[in-house]
Each structure stands twice: as C-alpha cells, then as structure tokens.
Image 1 (cartoon, rainbow, N blue to C red):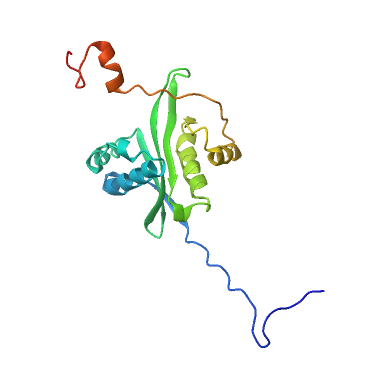
Image 2 (cartoon, helix red, strand yellow):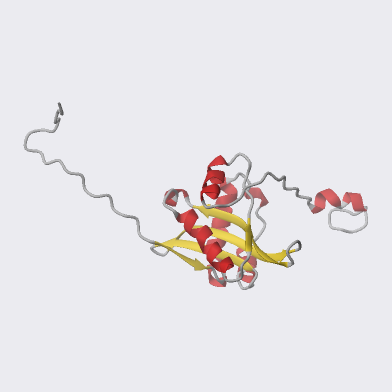
Length: 182
C-alpha cells in the first residue's frame, strides 16, 4: 500500500533541475595570465601549499606565449571553473616528446560535473596528433583521484617524487643561499 502524504488540493510535481551551462575548453593565452594566477593560487591553497607559489601574473604572461607550456581553461558562461597545465618536454627513454601534466584543478562549485574529465580529454586531444605520452603525478592519499584516473584508462604505479631545492644542495657545493661561495 502506498500512502500519499500530500495535502488535499496540492499539486505534486518536481520542477526539473536546471542543467548547468555547457563547459567549454580553450587554451589560455597571455591575456589570461591573471586568471591562471588565481587558479594556481586556489589549487595551492586547496593543497595547503600556497606559501610555495612564487610565479606571478607577469611571469604567466611570458609563459603562456611559449609553445611548450599548455594551460587549458574550462569555462562556464565566461567564468573559469577549472584548468589543467602541462609542459611538453623531451622523454629521454623514447627519444620523443611527452606531455607532462602538472595540475588539474576544478573549483569546488563545478566539481562532480565532468569538468576534470573534459580537461584531461582536452590534453589527450592535444597529445594525440603527435602521439605523445601523457604523464602526471597524484598524491598517494588521494584515492578518489586515483580511481578517476584508472577509469580514464591511466596506468598508475607507485613512485616517490624527490625535490631538491637550491637551499638544500647549495651548502653541499660550498655555496651560500644565493649561489656564491660560502
């Protein structure tokens, strides 16, 4: 038995949920430097690393003019809702180039809507014409991202990333913090 708990005379229908506007992808150019800077700061803050961001919008204006630097912007109704960044570089084992993805970020209000997938497929579209391998890293504790990447068909393998900052190696070379002799 089904019980209808609606009040008499009330009409019961659910209004259709509005579909979010279409997300479009485009390659960022120098004019997008301020937007890219804000998105980089947002992902860094999200990861608890904002203090490590040193790049400026002025530097982004220079970088976005380079052919080897790729930043795809995901936009909805003219507003950036995410980005993916990569650098095309030499892969010494194959002797050819690869596309090394650095960041994939979707703003909180646009997550779970396929934007991350679109961004990675956009990178794949860029790489496909030149048959480039695409690589990227993911934090070991980010199991949700790992599941997502596996669903895309990416092969994941454990590997530790080492970072050797100038402040750490210069003393071993007998140099001060600026690279001069200590």
